[in-house]
Length: 216
Image (tube, rainbow, N blue to C red; front, top):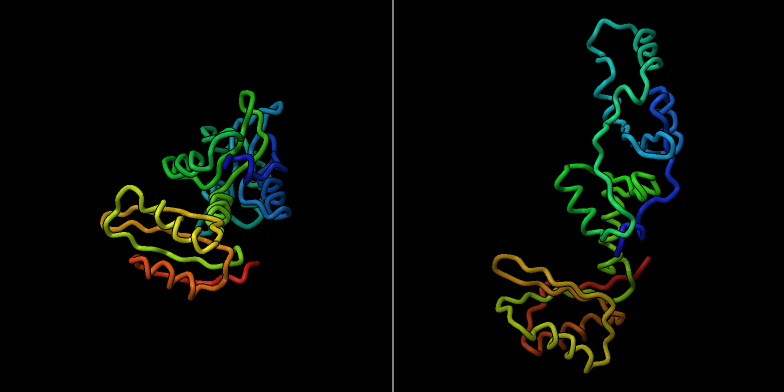
C-alpha cells in the first residue's frame, strides 16, 4: 500500500510568523501534536509540542507567569521550528515511510509533491493502523499461527492447498522469518477454529496460536 492510502489529507498549517501560543491553541483545538510550517504554499519547517516545550522557559527560573507568557507571545514559530524535516511522497510505499521514520527517529512525515508543496501528513499511528488492516486482525473469522522449524521451498503452497482442499477461504497471510523459526500467520473467513486447527495439525504442522475474532 501507498502513503496516500493512510495519510491525513486535511492538514492544518501555520506560517513562520505565527506566534507560538497561537500554534499551541491550534494544536489543542484540533487535537494535533505538530504543525507543518509553510511559506507561499511550500513547506519550510515543522513545529511540534515537544519543540515548544524545549524552548519554553523552565518553571525553575525566576520568571513570573506574566513574563513567561509575554515571551511565548512574542516568540514566533519561525524562531524555533525544525527546518530540516524528513518528508515523503504520496506514492511511496508505507514500508518506505516506516523505514524513514526509524532511520531519522521521527514519528511523523509531511507528505509533499512538486517541490515541497504539502498535501498531507502521515504518523507512526497511521502505520500501526495500516499494519493492523493488512494483517486483518480485526476482521471476523479465524486466525492461526503455524510454526515452521524446517523452512524450505513449497511449504507455503502446501499449507494453502491444504486449506483450499477443505474449501476454507484465506483473507490474509503473512510470513515472519526469525533466527530459528518461521511463522506463517493466516486469517480466514471460517469461525470453526477447532476444525481448522485439526486439519492443519493432521498434516504434520504445529499450530502455536489459534483464535477467533468476532470482528468490529
